[in-house]
Image 1 (cartoon, protein in one colour):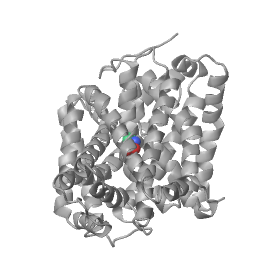
Image 2 (spheres, protein in one colour; image 1 turned 135 degrees about the vertical axis):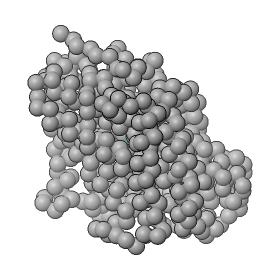
Image 3 (cartoon, helix red, strand yellow; image 1 turned 90 degrees about the vertical axis):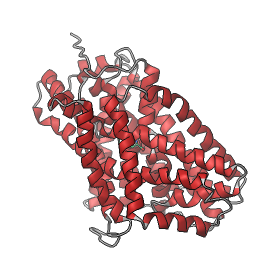
Image 4 (cartoon, helix red, strand yellow; image 1 turned 120 degrees about the horizontal axis):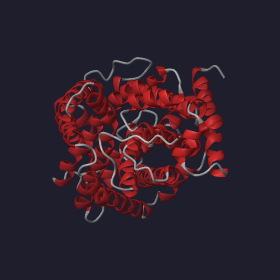
Length: 453
Ligand code: PHE
């Protein structure tokens, strides 16, 4: 009965490699750059609590569903969906999950690469001692100078896009393993050092309180949507990235256990980043709601003051770039595998085309920080709009469709066989979360933000 397919792109060599690669995908700018700044913009504690809840009851169940679909289909998300529809005798229209995922990936990478470019440029700033003994104003000015220069932003955006495409062209499984094994733990250690440093600051407890003491008066319907969208974004869910990584997963690996490990690691990194950053914000009289520049305006102040700050700062931005790198290659992988499988392209050609187009779209984000900063639609710049649409609407929508598909369309024998945890309490809990809690939560949050309920 079991119909196990093979991936034309090869398999991960072990469960451990999959965990590293999926964690590499999950841990990225979302944790270190985005989480602190959106938590700051949305009032802190209550936002963080909702985000954590979303990770637990929506994120983990959907991650399991997404990996399961990927492993069963063993191909690019669109073809995986086509295959699964065949197995389930369902209408092929479900392939829309794959299409919307590719579009979301394209949109996300377009701005992701620009922000990763900031991290790249900060490596140089750190080495050259720009932050040494710098005041909060000097650090802030350094950042606004960077944003004001489209040429510099484009240069670093281009560099990062090339880095991404070079790895993707070689196949995400080659070379990734060794790098992730060393650099992810290194990033973790460095974050711990930063939190240790933050503890020595007068305002550490204020930072902790800001992050963990919920004040529900400060959260809006839109804030709830952003928290949910971020749960998807940070776990790389809802657009097929985890699905394609699942497609390379050997059959004997437990999807449930690995999903929980990945979600825990990802959440831990985000919380550490928050703990490192907010004490600096409060100690220096900065604004928690300063926006996308938050980490770039805060951490350098600490690097400038701490002993060995030049080394730590440089290392930090190298590792941040690396974390962004291991994420960006997964964001575009669904598109690349689609071009390879369905358009018969070589990986190199697929990367050139997809990378070129994504790079072009990224110019919109570059300009939205300077030349077109005042051009707004729904009160949002181009960057804000692309991020909002992809992260807060397309990813949850993709996740919603995946949960409906796995629960209502795929026969239970298939899901149970792939999950392989029997049909006991664990399976029932997962099924319940996926059938009721996740989809209903997504729908309520959507309706709430439009103002219907
Ligand atoms: N999870 C990544 C991060 O937090 C971003 C990402 C989004 C990766 C969607 C893949 C898919 O930085």
